[in-house]
Image (cartoon, protein in one colour):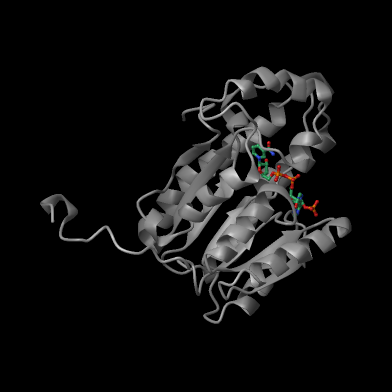
Length: 273
Ligand SMILES: NC(=O)c1ccc[n+]([C@@H]2O[C@H](COP(=O)([O-])OP(=O)(O)OC[C@H]3O[C@@H](n4cnc5c(N)ncnc54)[C@H](OP(=O)(O)O)[C@@H]3O)[C@@H](O)[C@H]2O)c1
């Protein structure tokens, strides 16, 4: 064995259910990227609180929770309607996670719920600014506050940001700013929660991903991104949920212990940083 491995064997079978016994909250996980993350964590053995807010998402959220509970890993799941911008919503999510956890722990918190509406600078209203900053900035701060008393050493926090934070895409004044804030959360919280609590915090930045949020954009916006998508280094296509979920799965695992305060570009190479 090489001395550079410090005597630790790095081959051998990989634990398939590497999150068994852990409990996770994934916000906004009825659809899109969040649903993929919930199922990925469940496949790895974690109990998962699946979260939605619109009544019309109840059925799809329950279907995601069923997929988690029936994937064969032994994970349990619950679909919880809760608005992540409200303190009552935070309480509902924390209470649901504690019901799923036999150890009364919340080991994993994934801040995925987001609003991606786009407006030119001249069209931004104070109401829109308030709504988008409440979901994308305020919610991660105050939900994390509520979860921290229950998060043990080894806890994992992942925030879904966006490459938009760094790209200067027209119509994204508020969205890009909120996603830049998400990156800042990872850096600041990694130092606040690292040595003192043993928690890692990372931000995952997808490029364009084929979800409801993407297709809710105007045709003008979608058309404007096509040349960029066609030039994606990894493959000439839009990102898919299956490209993003395993990256978050890794960042929630014990094996990611040496990654914290990072912004992980998950864009097929559209942005390297
Ligand atoms: N799609 C992309 O191209 C892309 C690219 C980069 C980053 N992202 C980021 O990835 C994350 C997920 O995006 P997506 O494309 O998967 O979005 P999506 O398909 O629109 O799904 C958004 C989810 O967030 C939930 N949500 C919205 N507001 C909420 C609130 N106040 N409380 C609780 N849940 C709420 C929605 O709940 P309901 O189902 O109840 O409506 C839904 O489940 C977002 O943070 C987004 O900014 C997306």
